[in-house]
Image (cartoon, rainbow, N blue to C red):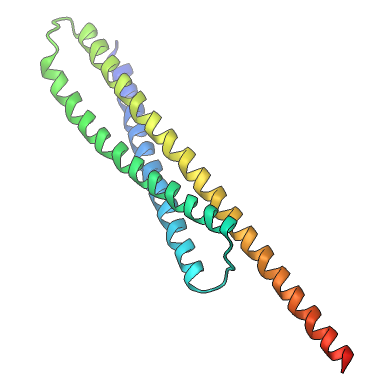
Length: 162
């Protein structure tokens, strides 16, 4: 492998690492923010609760919490794997630099696959949590609108009878 190819490969790896870190950061912000927003909505008494809407609210909280946990696990594993990759440089007993590079690269790729699986799982849980909170809000808003319509109809019928 030429020196320029190695440099290009290193730049690609750095870019991938930066993108993974940004992705994990965004997932944390979105899931944490949605969790806090849902709590503020229910404390503002803006939503009407039913058993069905409550199930969606609680399930969204569970999925947001799982997203945060998996994201934390992914960050921890990534840090561990980075340290392990540094240790592997000294542990691989291969005199041929190209073979040593291929061995090290293979190990890093395998470890990154595990991190990517965790990240995809976090994305899936985040999506399920967001869908659950949207369904909760839709059910609650629909219930509030129905209650407003019933109250308005009662007021209109009371005024007609007077």
